Length: 261
View (cartoon, rainbow, N blue to C red):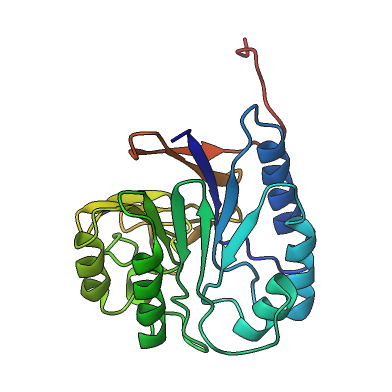
């Protein structure tokens, strides 16, 4: 199997302001300029800041690229608006679950959002859908699961209280299928790694801001940091089905190829 490169972007929070849109534009330019372009761009939720139609229109324009873009909703999103603007489907409040095949890789996007709530949960409908995806996926070929809400404790005082409910059910599913190479999430506004169901759990950083951890948070101060440049994840699946992930800061000012004096 040739190398598969999946770029992950998360928590873009399009809000009709210039700042967040410009940061995503810079990230998309970075992807387009890579010698080996990503086979797909995964956006793990909170596409918009408040689920407004105009914000989705802004996102749709930003995601108009030659590289396939696969997005899933987060707690700041609106399922009906997400469907009509980004998927071209009729409005509906049902979970937005989709799967995509990238070479030998199956990418399963799970909707962990709960309308009107900041925390996450996977509905029975989603588990039934996922069971069908796993049954249809090729034997001995890699699978990536993606959702918005992390199913693990991250030592993030803000996020840990609004993470995925009942994570053990998903952990048992992950542990029981050797084809699942990792679980990808967003929501935490911080790059983080741990294990879940015996597999890597990789939390993608936000392009918009960085959320403080337990070691630095001091309510009501030091909650969010808007100074850092946008950060993204690059997930590589090799011919041995091993997953390697690089977290990369995308400088707003461009690349400097010579060490400054």
